[in-house]
Amino acid sequence: MENKLNIIKYIIIALLILVVLLIAILFVFKFQNNNNNDVVSESKENKELITDVNYKYIAAAMKDGKIGFIDEQGNLVIDFQYDYLDGITENKYIVAIKDEKYGVIDKKGNTIIPLKYDYVELFSKDDLFIVYKNNKCGIMDKNENIVIPIEYWEIGEISDSNLISVSKEHKWGLMDKTGKEILPIEYYEIKDLLSTNFISISKNNKYGLIDKKTEKTVVPLKYDDISPFYELIEVELDKKYGLLNENAELIIPIQYDDIKELSKDGLIIAKNKKYGVIDKNNKTIIPFQYTSITFSYDSNLKIYDSSLMVASNEGKYSVIDKENNIISSPYAQYDNFSIKDGLIIVTKDFKYGIINENNEIVIPIEYDSISNIPNTKSFIVSKNSQCGIINMNNQIILPISYDSISASPTSSQIKIEKNKKFGTVDETGKIIIPIKYDSISDFSENGLVVVEGNEKCGVLDKSNNIIVKPQYDAISDFVKVN
Image (tube, rainbow, N blue to C red):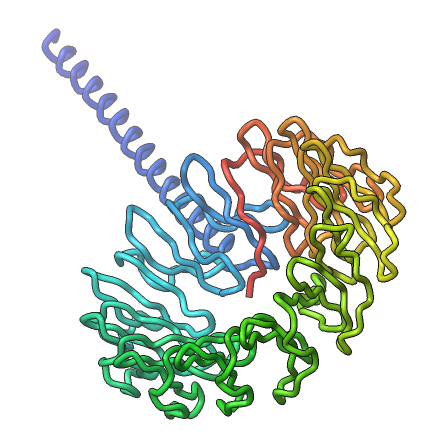
C-alpha cells in the first residue's frame, strides 16, 4: 500500500513539473513573438519616419560620433548611423561614409548606392555618381548600373553639358555620359571653363576650345593659354592678351599687357605699362595714362561699376568718371582710397574714413577699419582692436566695445562677439540673440541658426525661439530637400 502511495506521489510531482515546463515554454514563445512584433513595428516606424516626410529643410546632426538628419522642427528624420556625410547642398543626393566605405543616400535616408566603395563623388544635376574602387574610377547610375567602366584614373564633370573628361596615364580625353568618345585620351589638360559655353583643351603646349553643346572644336590648338574671364574668355599669345566673346570670336585684339577688371560697359586693360579703359568693341574710354585703375564695386549686386573709378599716377590718386573727368583729387591728403557701394573709403596714416564726391569728409578718418553692412547705411568700424557700428552721420549704433562683428547680405541680423561669447543684433543695435553662446553659424535660408554652448549644439529661429535644444555634438546648416 505504501509503495502505491509513493508511486502516486511521484506521478503527481512529475505531472506538476510537466505543467510548469509547459507554462514556461508558452511564456517564452509568447515573449519571442511579442519581441518579433515589436521589431516589425519598429522597422515600420523607422520606414515611415524616413519616407513619409513633410519637411522642406534638413540639417546633419552629430551625436556620440555618429551623424543623422533633423528637420526644421528638430525631428529626427534619419537615425544616427553614419561616420560622415558629404555634399549636403541643394543636390538631392548625399555621399555617406560608414566604416571607411562610401555610398550614396537621398535626403529621405534611402540608400541609392550601397556603402561599399573606396570613394564617391556626386554629379551636380544628373542621377549619376563617380565611384572609386582599387584606385580606379567609373560612373554608376542610381540603379547601380555601370555607365562608364571603373578603369580611369580621374573623371571630371563638364558643367551644363552631356560631357565628362577622363584620365589615364597622365593624359586626358573627352566622352559623353554614355561612354561615347569625343576626344581620345591624349591631351595634357581638359578644363571646364565655368560660366562659358566652352571647354579648354591643351596639347603640345597649345590651347584650343571645344563647344559644350555641339561637341565640336571651335578654336584649334593655337594659343599659349586660355582661361575664363567672367562670361568672356581670355587668350594669351606671345605674352600678350585678348578676349573672345560667347561665340569664341576675337573681340579684343591680342595686344595688351594685362586685362584686369570687367564692368557691364568697360574693361580695365594695360598697354605699354599704362592702364586705361576700353569697351567690348575695343574703343578707348579712358586713355592709357594711369599706373593703376580700379572700378567701384557693388557688393549687393556683386558687380563692378565703371561710373566712378580710382585712378593713380606715381602714387597720386584721383576719383574719375567714365569721361575721364576728375571728380575728386585728394591725393595730397590721403594715402589711398577705394570706391565700394558708391562710397569713397580713404586712408591716412593707417586710419580709415569716408569722403563724398566733393572731397568732403563724411565719416572721420579715425578708424582702424571700416566696412559697410549690406543693405543698410551703417558701418562696422574698429578702434584699438574693438568693434562697433556707426551710421552715415558717424552716430554710434552699437558701442565700439566688441571683439568682432560680422554681417551677411543674406540676413538682417549681425553677429557680435564679446569675451569669446556670441550673439546677434539688428541694424538698430538691438540685441536679438543674447551674447552667451560659444559659436553662432550664419542664418540658413529658412531663417534658422545653429548655436553652440557647453559643447552642445542647438537651433534657434531669428526671433531667438528655441527650435532644437542644445543636445548635439554638431549641426550643419539647413539645406532644402528637393
